[in-house]
Image (cartoon, rainbow, N blue to C red; front, side, top):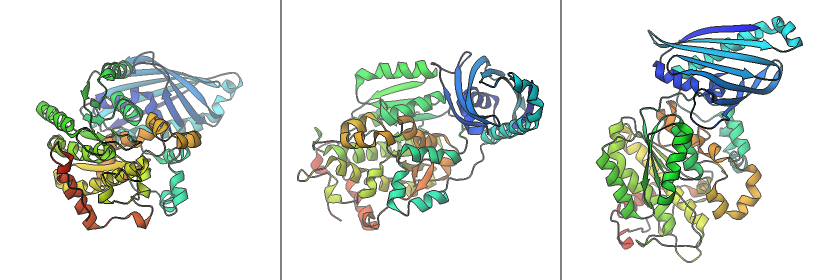
Length: 476
């Protein structure tokens, strides 16, 4: 039997420190021996919750199964872990200190068979790993990380098209996550609005942020799914602060009504996530006369974000996250084509052009709103296995399915942009896997300053709900 005992003081309130450690999935962020960690039982974190960790020890890499056996909020956590080589009991006490919270961490290892007799031989190595892990926990909770930068490997990759595109895959995600920093910012006092939250990336984002305790306003189109969505999230996370707003965001009248409803609540918005989207084939127009892709993917987030800007400013440090697509790398801003014409229509091309426009808005708003403390960034999820990809791009889906990310992997950077403290230090950037990336892989897709100005002017001309002819999308 070997007992490791460490104490640390962290600059965080007890409630925040306890909540972060209690969800033992965070171990992969701060424990030097943990490669991955996941919750394998249903429901919110409480006594009886089970976790599975993939761990690296001198004995090799193996699974370690933990059960949370004692859960006293703000005071004590006890977890019992089992593996093929040993059992471990982690007992963690929390108390107020002069700097915030004192954490008293004790881990007792009981080795099986011959390893028990040899335990003394690797005591020193275990003690070092214990010190490193607890110091990692302190670093995570102190949360003093620099602004995100592009790594040298990804800088080299994006200079060539093919290596850059390989980063969109599941393999690219796994490669990127090896160097990620912990993400411990408290979300219990944050209000997040997410559009398109009933499936795919939006649902994965809502699940993650609900588990972190954020108050959520989820905007979905289908009223029939509202109650089930709310109940499922509450049941899994224990978060009772989940609200549903019904709106078809392809209709500007409904965008306006949604904006007014949220304004009447007078509740500051800490994070707005513009995620709602779809790829339309064949071409169609909304009942207001707008081409569908333009309406949903560009005009809608433009109007919604401008309408909610006062609530973002009131939050102090509000964040806007625009979900774009790697498909925009092949698209150039062409104002006459924003409302895709019937002749030669391509749903994927219309989608890409709209996302290019949203990226330009991201950059423009970041500059214009910097003085008001609003951070605006875009992200693209890589190639993710979502219902939208399967239904809209069936051939691509069949060919690329083994390479596709899970919805949770695709949504990871959305969650990071909403949560991480250091993400608030960058604005006007495009992110993939928590790193800023180039917005153009080809010089031929770069727009001019007059074209950017003309885009803003054209969108500003679409202020009224109807008719579409009031929107003057004209050549520069």
